Image 1: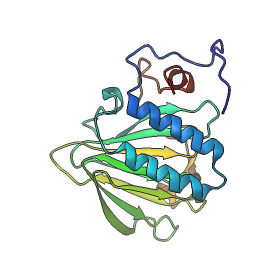
Image 2 (image 1 turned 180 degrees about the vertical axis):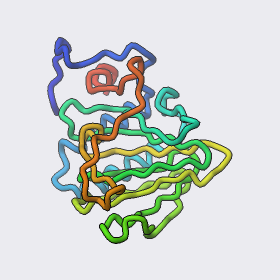
Image 3 (image 1 turned 90 degrees about the vertical axis):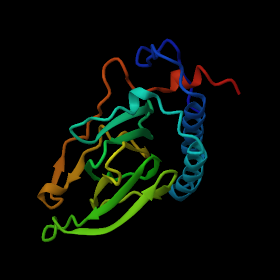
Image 4 (image 1 turned 45 degrees about the horizontal axis):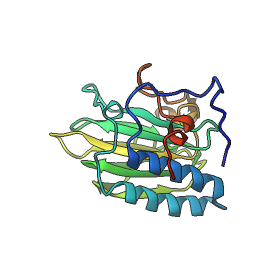
Length: 217
């Protein structure tokens, strides 16, 4: 476990409602797993089970991290690890909306919290960058895990429902807000800038101090 100094000015005390208990426990367990796991495979196996357990209910996601944008999909950072070992992110897709996401070179655990998502892999090779690959439908509570890859896969995440918002929760093996990703627009040959988050200044992600400060066991 990392030691937390409450006087550290780099750690924020979140001035809003406490972290929902189910989310707090999930983040705490993910941190413990990342610290203790001996391989990426172990992280993915345990992490997938932890997310599936979290998804037995869907009322733990704070509203500020679930706001849809009528103009299209957007992402919020729910948790920021001070050592950048992992991050927890929500992707919010209003009815019929889609986002194209280049897979970062870190592991990922992802699940559909609400609604239904069509996840389609796009061919990122220079000659076939516009061609679509395999597509699969993920219903609510579906969870999957993916190993890190340096091949620059590009995925389209589309809300399969036209009349309501769908939400995906991701746990990445790094802070993807700071990791450059390959852009599919140029056949995967150009580094895209880091993907930003839609968090407002009043709704920053949780951090380890806010989580640890509320853990009682």
